[in-house]
Picture (spheres, rainbow, N blue to C red):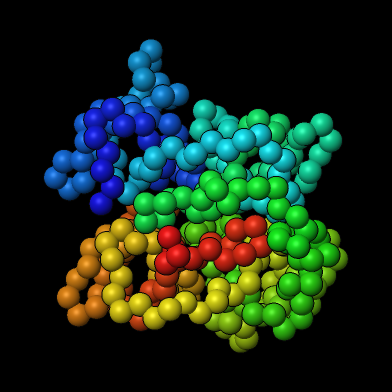
Amino acid sequence: MEHFPKGTEVEISSNEEGFRGSWYAGTVIRPPKPKNKVLVQYRTLTAGSRPLREVFDVVQLRPPPPRERRRSFEFSEEVDAYNRDGWWEGVVTRVLAGGRYAVYFRATREEMEFGESELRLHREWVKGSWVPPLEEEKVLNSTEVKSSIETVEEIFGKGAIVEISSDEDGFQGAWFGATVIEALSNSKFLIEYQSLRNDDDTELLKEEVDHLHIRPYPPDTLVIDQFSRHEEVDALYNDGWWVGVIAKVLKGQRYVVYFRGTNEEMEFKHSDLRLHQDWINGKWVMASRV
């Protein structure tokens, strides 16, 4: 379990509608008590004239990410953008003139422009370490990152096995297996889902998706005999893989998984879980490597 003593600087994720996918700076006022609840004071959000204070589950906190040197960003690179007093997870969709970038936010389906100083490299806090770590950070060249439309279309050619994300309410945070039928113009793809069916239930669902909602199918990972508490996993539910955190380890290779996006806990058997992996800068990063 993470240790956040009184006075610790942290970042806080929220499960409230309209704030999912964002991180806000704060300070621990009261460290974890029974049931892992922490009292935190926001640095930028207020209640009237006073800084806002709220109680959070410890899994909603993380240390502030390391601040990298000033750098440029690439097309399709995952970033955090500073907006509305917090950092919001997004993807660079266009590199503009004058050190400015267009960033797309899956959670709100919006695209906004930001200056270089308003962006930071997106990192995940995995088992006590940052992914990618600070020492790996550099401006990647074209052989290391899938940054061009041409390369994206090459990865997701006809017949490629992929996973698809959705912006629809109730499906955010899930990835669904699919097969590429055809690469279309404007970096869009016609895909057929492996398990989702059309409204008439007569055939597998086909859909057009853009490059922001498609990724390769995750590679096989090492067989895990048992998952640990607070380990990030994907849980198979409603025909998709949903990102969660192991909240409890039960008997008989069963687990309670907590989902930040919905603030829910559900029980899963071992075979319905896999190690969580992130597709970052054109490569897979596994929690097991941290």
